[in-house]
Length: 363
Image 1 (tube, rainbow, N blue to C red):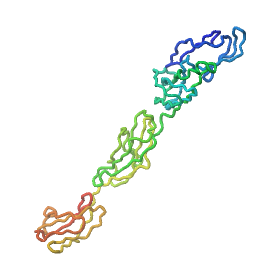
Image 2 (image 1 turned 30 degrees about the vertical axis):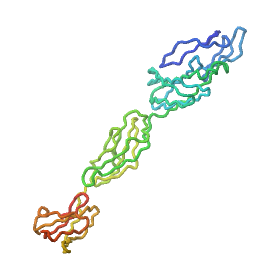
Image 3 (image 1 turned 45 degrees about the vertical axis):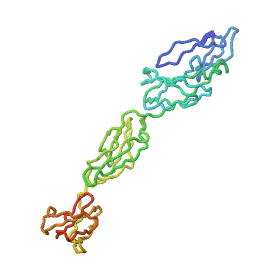
Image 4 (image 1 turned 90 degrees about the vertical axis):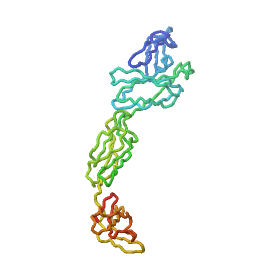
């Protein structure tokens, strides 16, 4: 309350818990005393009272954000233990620019605010993204208007009233579960050797949901049970060598964000660690040799084998030579026939089948 004086005084908004001194500002239009003062919705109302000529029945009002106060608006935002300030949207009919946004944070409602930080302002009417990434703390915010852009309003019109700068602070949970996962893959590292199944995944989901706080990790699950946990962020593959050979498993990857919330890929991928030690069937007693011109034509019955790679034809100068040490490889045809010149010294022939993993039949 100001008693019978033509001077008004103002006090700057608190910064980090401190309060500045009172300072003289614009003179009050009508000196008075015994009046009632009400502060409401950003305005200060002075109602009635007594002046030099007796009682007064008028109402004077002004904004609490006029030039004398450097047009400051302060708000203590309790965003709780799991909220994040995202942006500030201004509604500014007077066309004032934003000189600065000042903020300070405290870990609790009763704690002392830390140092004040200033972020340069933006043009009127534009969204003001704070980018503070403040989670679980109290935030003190002060907006400074550019008074030079509203001098005609501040200087006289509407009894010196300045327009209120309204703003909406948008905040959301600091922590949500990850979202937008790309399904992982799983493949046998080598179907011919016992080398395991390689599970691969994308480094990042569409949204980690943790607003860049905490430590992110991955878990690899086989049929719903973790076989690798806490893999460091940036890891994008893991080889499972502990499964049963030939058994098909479903592999998924669990993304753990910095808030310890997680989401697993779906539906995952199925794979088995195949270890092929089974050769294709033997040629058996189906080998025939006939003369055709200058060649001896060797032929045999084709074997039924899904992973047949080729055949191998051997020749020897003796029917009784030990196999395979006493025999010479003549060729590796893909079909069940082979021509050998009659001029060669070989009198005996033998053929075996070979599959895609190099496993050979015995004869």
